[in-house]
Each structure stands twice: as structure tokens, then as C-alpha cells.
Length: 246
Image (cartoon, rainbow, N blue to C red; front, side, top):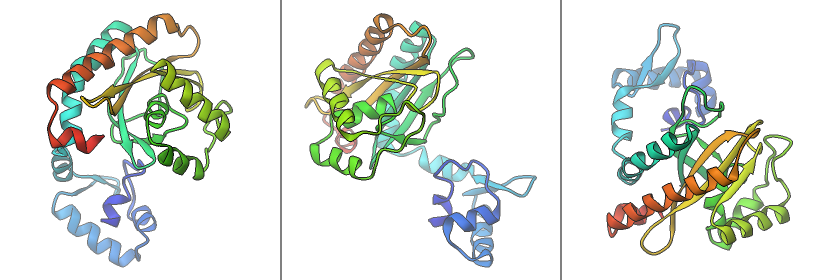
């Protein structure tokens, strides 16, 4: 498990030495276990001697029911939002104190972003994270703040009081806006996806270039998409899968 977890921070390709360092394993032990995982299809050895996650592990992971069900339900609405804007579209859920990205759509002219499927990014510096944090319990917010708010650009909000004020604004208006807080020259508008009880299951966002970003165009588009997805969630509600994501 420690070896597989070594790939979680985003190391698409890792050498044996990097795997052992991340997994805190002796090189000889790591060599033996990596060999067994490769033989079983859980890891794949590349021509340069590095390793990546294998197809067998990907097939197992693709069966994560709650995330897969939400992603499949969200994709048509994400595609509609992309067609209306031709900007990056993202879907994320809470995973401990991070925003876990279930899906993203981007076009050839979309602003470059650091997001990828299965990536985890900080709640305080991303649009989707700001939404997920805003509608979490006070105890959860306190826990995130206690860990510290790391700066990712010069524009990242790192003051707890200022962040709390931003979260209050999100709850008041129903959407979040971030500007260059995770990536320079990026602008994000995000809104919540709700279940039948009004709880927030996920957040969907548009990410565009800061220059020329038009809230009058972006906000209604995001709200239309998230409200439509919320209606679909409610129509398919009542299952354990949705409650597991809440």
C-alpha cells in the first residue's frame, strides 16, 4: 500500500529509488515488492526503467462507485458548460482537507491549469475548494485553518479572518470567485452541487484567463450547470452512493 500511495502526490513516472524514498522502504525490499506489483499488473515498467500505475489498478479504481456515479451524471452538464464557454470545466469533491478532482474538460485554447483527474488541491486557493469549504461545518473549517493556509501565488488568501469573510460571501451569493490564487493568470467561478437534503455533494467550476473574464457571462453559466446537475442528483437520489459523498 505504501508503494501504491507513492504515486498519489502526482508522480506519473517514478524510479525505483523515488518509490522507495516516498514509501520509506529499503531499496532491496522495494525492489522485491515493486517486482511483484509489476508482475500482477498493478504497476507498469517503462522502457527507461521508471514505473507508473498499471492498467489493472486503473480498472479497479474506475469502479469506485460513488465517484464514478457522480462523474457520469455530471459529464453531460460539464459538456454543455464547455460548449457554452469553451473554458476549462472541473468537478471536485471533498477528500479529507483537499479538493479531489473527479473530472475536467479543457479545450485547445483554454488557459493552462495544474488540475488533472484524481489530483488533490488545497481548498482555500481553488474555486471548487472555496465552495466545498464554505458549506462545510464550522469544525471542519477550523481544522483546515489550523493546518495553515499556504501561499501558491502572491494572490493566495492566507489570512484566516479574510478567508472566513470570503466563505461568508460564498454562502450569501451561492458561488465562489478566485483570481490567480492557485495559478497566475487564471480566474475561477465555482458553484455547489446539492442533494435532495440541500447538502453540498460537489462543486463545479469554470477556469478562464483573468484578463477579459466577464462575471456577467460566467456566473449564470456555472449556476445553470450546477442547478441542472443538482436536479439530476435529486432525481437519482436516495442511494447510499450519494450519501457517501456528502
